[in-house]
Length: 463
Image 1: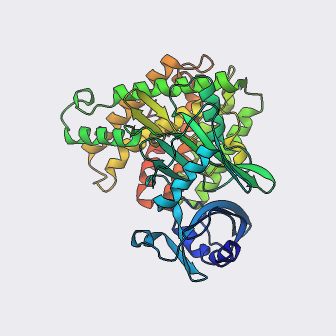
Image 2: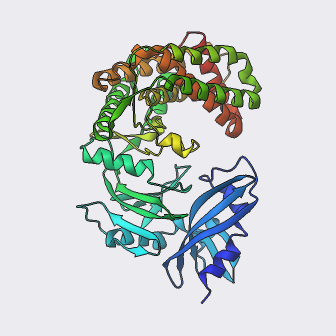
Image 3: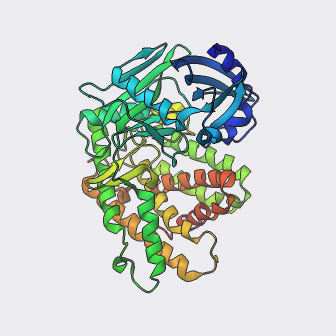
């Protein structure tokens, strides 16, 4: 039998070419200079073999840890061929999250509350789990990998690891303790060790099989509006405004629950200076990389500077941190918020810091704009009818969302539109981030955030 350490030692030589082909790999901006194994844990010995592997990926001066599930067996089934990484020591090695026979072991380990090496598999207190279920990967995720077990559970594996308790796990636990109605129930976790510090490997939640994500619902509504160019938005069959209002209430309710569970504090005198500096630094960095942003830079700087004029107390608390329509699910009972990990590209310290709830509101407002204007990509940019329909949809739903949020808002926030300068700055800062993302990943989408920046800085787009 091949020693797993020898197998891994050979396998890591394949990873510099393989890792950049994975959707969840965050280091596509520069070449990989080295990959080193940090830990190897045998989850299932024999043939087939299941390994949990943590590697350090070196890219010039950047070193980041990632987790992998590696399967190996003498005779690789044809359906796993697309997951093949390499043949090491005569054995095919492959990315195992698509192997239902192997990944079922993960649920069993959580149900058994097993310990294997430094890995600890645990149920939440009072939780009972049904084992023996096969898993299938969720295809839509990018920065992580989720496995659905039957119609019962969903296990999220955090691909890029950060020392300490992951915010997604921490905030779900806190919200569960105060009875939050807008999250999926937390059932278990997988934790480990990274450089002598605890690290969150994965979290298990109740799966909601009837759920539809907000992005799919919103873009369907936009298509319905475009298909009936003569009807006003409130008369189109797929009008989304009612759902947008209910979503606003759900987000405000989650903010209130987070404040109740984990507290809040009033921003100190230096908070606005730090906020403006961070916004300006991002703007300067993105402007150097994206020349198309240059003409808007003076207006963006002016909008950011107005943050310093903020008067009155501003509440700071734990928030979602990366809120958009793809991070919410509509079920038969209402809206759920998912993925409280924060922006994956943000520094770890930023993702666990107290921030204004208006940042989440701004993120959702940007998402409504995206849902409307992504329909124009590939169309004639000079078609005023389509452009006006997109603007109508975005304005109607942005307003409905804020109406809903105001109804259930934490008392320290109230109607987000009452903080117009701060909300506008947060939205523009998010749009600058989007410019950088689209320039690097989807150049054909660059017009979406640039057009929004042009409208907002000209005073033509309000929540």
